[in-house]
Structures are given as structure tokens and as C-alpha cells.
Length: 488
Image (cartoon, rainbow, N blue to C red; front, side, top):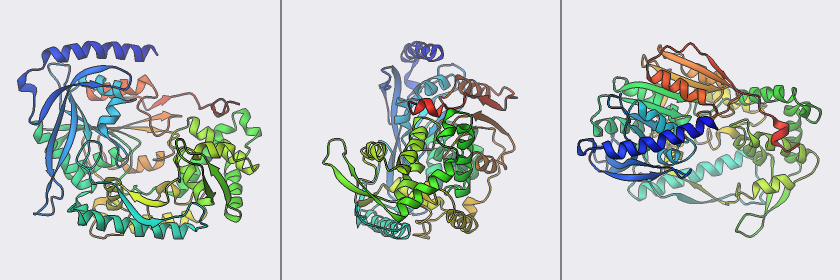
């Protein structure tokens, strides 16, 4: 708490400093000064700007689209390259991130340069294609196999691509390569020789793409929860390993008496749902109650949504499995009341859909995923609706040259959570083996969203930005207390 209060006090002083020190020479084209308001109530002087890029640089007739950002000016007279934040997803908004939990980080990093909250193409307030609601449906009480679910999502995605193209939108421009080249245009827009990239999850995937296609334009890279160029689709065996690690934590707590074998419990519940799906009455806030036929694939997808971090959602998930094993559906009903699985018509957003489809998966990795999914706890649910949508349009797929291992000598800091249930630690290590100037720090007991779990994370980021030698290889956090999180 003292760390947070100190940061907020510093922010207030920096805000006054920036408002007084900005000159006309500091303003770039299409920028205007604003008062940026964070969700915690803090307000700072900043610049709201935009620039224009080709929707598809591979199409000579491509239209231009607008990309928006918010720029927080550097607080030091002598500073380095602009620091560009790359949100995850794909589909996350950098501007929205700057307003929320990572606001203090955006402010703190201004010590090293202008910090840019970027809304990548097709996200946030940047120019975006309208969402597509397809004509393809999955009835809420329809008994349906995983194979048929995949088939319908594939049909819906193809329909949506056709609909967007009919509106004059070039869907082939929504790839990580085109997204990375937008960073080049941003660099030019800011009159900078190089930029520093700072991202998480898909943002790390985008940063790696930039390292591959424009390495000479990048000064440094800070990434967390890394997703390699052939890791859009995660390995089911890694998900199984994650649950084995969770069992290791359970074994140290009183919860062990109730859950002596979590994987066995999960399999048992899945088998019950496969044999006898359950009609669950869901009361969605602000809407009429509806009935959902809750099936095995629903449970697997729900689990995949709740394991990114070892917080209350993981504990809640364990409790759901315990309850379902006993025929108790009250907690499940409360969770489903948040609107999960409430829509019958399949719908997509272009950026989120196309980026994953374009990055795709190599044939070798796909074959491995298919084999592992047959016996793994969550099957392919963590990747849904991939890999079913891989190669639905071969022209969109970036190919194996894109997915080939990355090599780079750009200084890079990688932060990895040991309990990351989204981008698994061993895969993160593999994704950066070709980086010759890599500093990797493991945050023990942290999950996927680790930037704000400890003030030591920011300390490391500062040290890295100052080119200080980092000998620390880990940050230790307390083990998550799953019993406490469940209110036991």
C-alpha cells in the first residue's frame, strides 16, 4: 500500500510538471492536449493523437484506416526512445489499459521516455470494423458435439469474412505483420529513430513480430507472459501440467482433504456431463431467466476462462468442480449469470478473429495438439475457436516463415509467472531461445497478469531501462491460499 501511495503522490507532481513544461515543439501532428482520467480518479496531462496507415500494405488499392493513441510525455529532460504499450488479446485496448490497473506503471515509465498507450488497428477507439453477428446459431438447449460446434464456428467465421469484405473492408490487412508495421508508422509519426516495446500476452506476440520484421527500429523490449510466433494455439499437455502444479499447491493446504486429486475430479465431472448434460436455469442480470443445457464442452471452456491467474477464479473453479460432482449447481448458476454462453447467434470481431487465424499454427504443432487434445483435461478449449478456424482462408494465413523461430539481438526483458494458466512457462522459455540479449525473470506463484503483483516487477523494469546489469532470476510471491479464496 505504501508503494502505491508513493506512486500516486509522484504522479500528481509529475502531472503538474508536464502541464507546465510542454511546448509547441513537443506536439506531433493530429495531437491535442487532454486531461487523462484514470479509473482511480487521478488526472494527468497527456496528448490524444492519431495517424493513418494502409489497411493492407500488400494491396496497392488499400484504403487507409485511423490508429489512435494517448501519449504521456516523458518526465526527464534527457530520455530515451518512446515506449509503446502493446495490449493483449488480440483485441485489447492500450488506452483502456492505461486507465486501469496498470496506470501507475504507465506513469512510472515516463522517467525513461514518452509512454504511448496504443489502440492497435481495429481496437478501442481506433477505426474498427463493425462486429459481425452471423446467421449461424447454437441452441442453448441443443445437444451438440465438439465436432459440430467447431463446424458451426467455421461456417460463421467464413460468413463474417464475406460480410466484412462486402462492406469494403480488407480482412487480409488484419495480421500481426500489418499490425507490427503500424508501429513503424507510429515511430515515424513521432519523429523517433527507434521505439521501445512493452507488452503482454498477444502484445508479446506482436512485439516478437516487430523484432522479426523491423529489428533495427527497436531499442528495447519488455514483455510478460510471452506468446511465441507459433504459439497462438497452446499445447493441451501444458494445460494438464498446469493442473498438476495446482494440485501441488492444494497438497500443502487443508483443501487436500477435499480435493486429493484435482485432475481425477475434473475427469469425473466431464464424464458425467458427457453422459448426462444438465439443464441449468440462468438468471442474467437485467434480463429474463433462460435455460442452458450445460454440457462437457461448456465446462471445459468455462475452466479455460478461469485459470489465467491463481486468484479467486481458480479457487472458484475448483469449488464448481466439487459442487458439480455432488450435483450442486448454485455456484455454477451464479457464474453463468454473467452472460457466459448466453448468445445463440455466433458473432465475431474482425481484429480478434483475423489476427489469430493469420498467425495460425504449423502443421507439426497442429498434429501434436490434435493428439494431445484427445486425452487432456480441457481438450482444445483453451484455444477456442482455434485451431478449428486455422486455414479457413489460406490467403490470410501468414505461413510457416512467419512462425519460424525468432532470432534477435535486441535487449529484451521477459517476465514469466510460474502459475500462468494461459501462456505456459516452458513454452515461454522456448519462444525466446533465439534472443541473444535476453534477461528472463520468473515471478514465482504469479499468473498471466503479473505486471502489478509486486513493486519488485517495476523495479526490474526500471533497472532494465537504465541498462543496469540484472542478476536476479526470480521474484518470490506467497503461494495462493485457495482455501481462503473460497471463503472456507
